[in-house]
Image 1 (cartoon, helix red, strand yellow):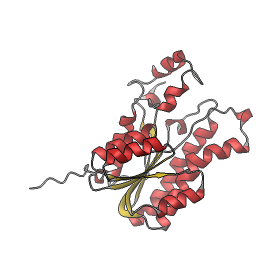
Image 2: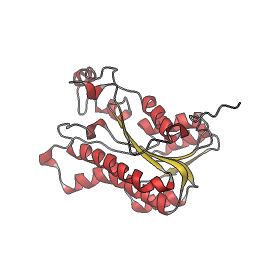
Image 3: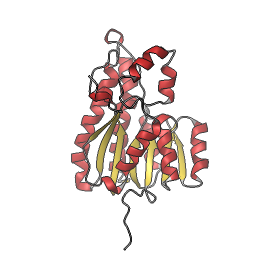
Image 4: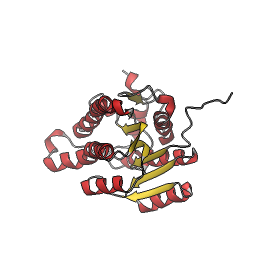
Length: 251
């Protein structure tokens, strides 16, 4: 009897935003190695070309700015019907309450929240997601507890989780699943660049001590994303998976 491996994503076609850095880049490489066909979206042409080379004809790159609605429409027009959509694009800035203005609000929200909302909407309107499809967006544990100076980031990620739960209900009739992942701190370029700019090395060491399993690696999140894209998660929708090495159980 042939074994049906529902974790196999070999035949999946997936759209990934934020594919040229951090978790998005790691996820793209993992899915390529697992045999997926990808549409990868980013702004770093060198990284896009690297993914195309790695994909050997199964990867189509799209250079786009997700803050621009015309670019969102262009992305949807230039892809085939997909089985999965991963929204990994995002930005984080530390802006205390007294320094928030409309410009900073719109700058963060446009990429962290608006891009996901309008890209999902356009994909659904244009019927570009297959039945049994899966939508995964990256939220953050910042949505679950307050971080000083990060009200915009925390708020956007919390909105992403809440909106995804609504989309899960609205798209259930199409058998499209919608879930979020809330990672803790992962060793990406963003975190590495924070050292010396926003945080001292000592501060990062002290923070990592609050993680029972230490900081994560991009692949730790990429494997969780792959599970949500696979048929092994066909009964999971409207959920937020906290993936933080135990950080949120730390008192």
